[in-house]
Length: 118
Image (cartoon, rainbow, N blue to C red; front, top):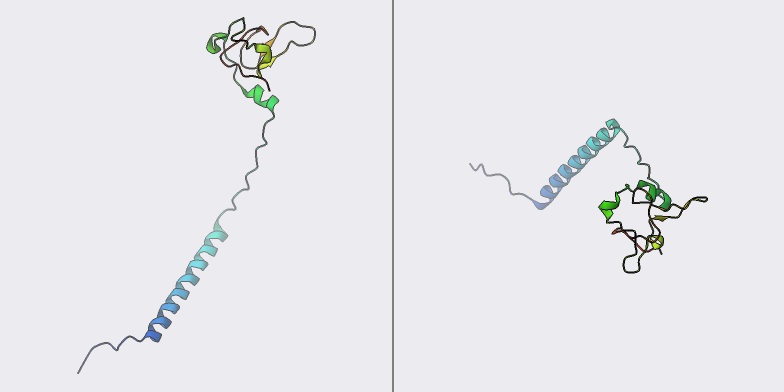
């Protein structure tokens, strides 16, 4: 008497594999659905508005004159009055300021943070 298993037929193999795959997929889908139902909804992030150039200038830290190498005279033809950080005098005053440098500055001065105004 022979106890050898019956030969594996192609149709039987494919039918068994398909049934196993379908059962696995169904249980995985049910598990995902259950997890999604119990999970807290994710909040929608609110976009941060892009700051304007005026707001950017107020966010820049104020530096000492020594920290930026400020001098009261032009440097290679570059002057504070032509820099993007320059603040002209307020009406009725003669004192100029800078968005970067603390304290009053000269429009004819210069520092290492100088950038040409476009």
